[in-house]
Length: 489
Image (tube, rainbow, N blue to C red):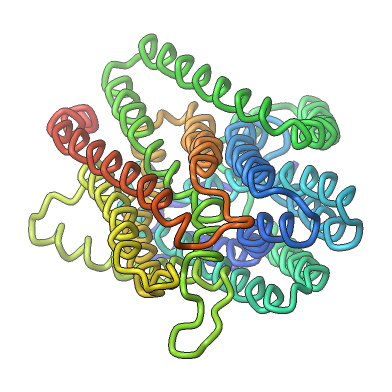
């Protein structure tokens, strides 16, 4: 059983643990297909397949919910049944097949292709993060930098995916776009195969099983993958029910994790789990607003933003590359800057970064009403305002997302790391459903004009911006408490 072949060697202070480089490139290829669907699904559904904006937003909300919600299940399934390495590759195979089906088979292919793609992407993202975090000991400070680099790789994949999506969007050549996504995802499988042994699991429950138990668990895991595809296919056709289901499931999981935390011993670990729960709850507001990008914010950009700055026609998907550029450039810079500040004695820690991320997100929303108030006579908002908004949102993302991944290894007991990694991603899934509801509050663009829809957009963006700023203040007040909970005895 090759998954038990690897042990965690004690690395030198500056050496890079084996497998981290391969995971960097795997992350790039694995992100391509998701980037294409994430940025194009609403436009494809409304422009090519005839969906209404509300139906497309609801489907996108469910898409995000299942993609992120299944991360919770992936953390459990990978560590106990298929191994993180095996589950990742099987998930990528499903993503390849799903993208190909969407490219070739119309509405029927859309639903079945999305079901296959979501089963794959929903389960395998946690596997990448678990494979990475297992390569570091709990006290290893290099973990945060590794996740920032890995997050930069993810956003490099987003950059390539968004760029291709915008290029094909200008001619609405969706078939070629989805076939491009198919090839990109296949690249992740190839890299994983070439570095198979160095990606073996470390310290997971599956490694303690006998060979016969391992085979039985492998068959059970494969059966789960087969069953999930038609289940998700059915849920996609009932988007409203699926949204309620995901929110209810998220609440139930949160309450269950609260109960586990209250009963957990030793006390030192229970305190850190309590800090995790508070931070996860506060991050829900951030992810709800962040997930507006492929929904309401995408439609706002398509209809109410001047997409011809300096005479250059900008595809809507290219706007999201503002985010990827900030992440790719800012991720390594942020890691370097934080190390410098900490070396000088500055207290840059998880609670402070979470509060700062929500403050940046709030500002990112609040600049949009300002831009709307300065719109031209045709109601179109200057392109610079959406740029400023995305830059602020991206800075907020840098402060919360890779740090959130890295904090699992710091705050979660070893036996709960996979589940708590999945719970962290489940928060994003619930945020995606809530983003779909918020997008429903925005004006309907079909048959209208920017002058008529701008007031509605301004009201919604103002409400969201002030709400995020308020939660930021609450977390700022809680920083002393959170620091006491996180501090190791």
